[in-house]
Image (cartoon, rainbow, N blue to C red; front, side, top):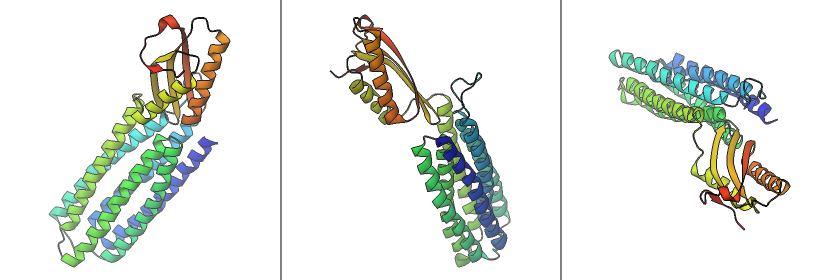
Length: 298
């Protein structure tokens, strides 16, 4: 059910990005503004990225198989990395547009109509970006979160351009168009690097944030009653799935049945807090205690 919802968001992203691209193309076409052309170029990448995200969501929804026994969730990180690389390439292209316009500035054709169309595109992006960001956080989807962050960065760019392009006919300073294009390029480059860094962290099994780690330690401490300690705790995420493993030390005289009940209780509590999770618990007798890690509450 969750995977089908994520796929619907992916399809929605493709449709919204096409609508926004149409609006921004019209904004550039009627105004002749290099800055608005730069904004439209970024939106071309949004369309490509939305299609890539849809592919990643489809692949990540596939069940584990013989070649991918842990599932296909990391496809979302691949999509986010590819999107980041595309964004960086777009920034370079926008930089060339800015340089050309700086060398050969020209008056705008119909700046107010262009500004209005671009502002409308920005409002559409704002609404959809907030929706994607919320969905990505709720469903622990790197692809949806990356798309939401990318779109919201585009909204800030659009807002700045609406103000900046409006100043060109008021001030008569034609090179302001090129300056705005260059600023768009810098912002797009920043977003691309941030997206790529975050996604590579996921591919490299980067540890979760301190708040999530503390939550997991607290759940184990409170729910493993009857055990002595938990140590060698390791956690990683792949898309919407958490992978957790640790050693649980129990009294040497405890039966296998009782130890298994403790493990079940801990696993159920972790899944209530984190959602989908693959959990491996290695049970050890008390002479294996390290007196480090997670102490169990009495």
